[in-house]
Every structure is written in structure tokens, then in C-alpha cells.
Length: 69
Image (cartoon, rainbow, N blue to C red; front, side):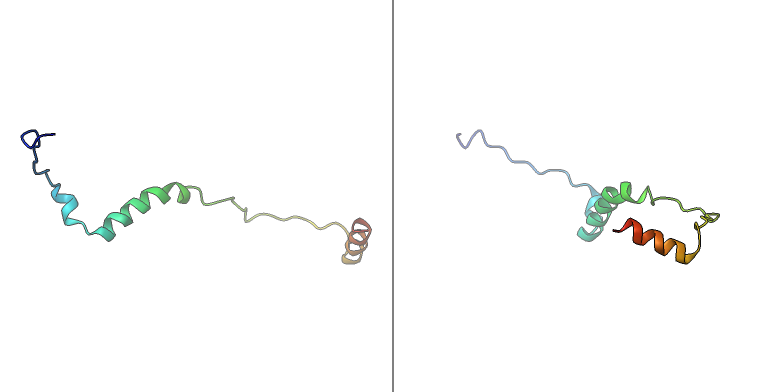
């Protein structure tokens, strides 16, 4: 390439981006990426969960021994 073909120009600077610090830019990018993970908090556990245990403590212990043989 000859020197006459080279042309350099100044690119426009976005003033809003210039005002933000590097840390703030990274923080905003990180929030965008992690937003999907915070949207689904996990399984819902009901306050009215009343599971009844079968038998007495001794019966459950004996049943566990039989199953774990």
C-alpha cells in the first residue's frame, strides 16, 4: 500500500460511555449476564407441608435395617 492510500480519522466518542468508569462498565455487563440466574430462585417449599411418618421410631429403624442388608 502506498502512503497516499492511507487515511486516518478520529472516531466519535460516546460521551455517556466516557463518563462511566471501567468498574461500572464491568458491573453493568456482569449484571446483564447474571440476570438470567437470579430470575428463577429455586423450588418452592410450602408452609403447609405436613408429611406423616409411618409407624413408630423403632418400626422405622427395623425397616431401615431390613432394607439396608
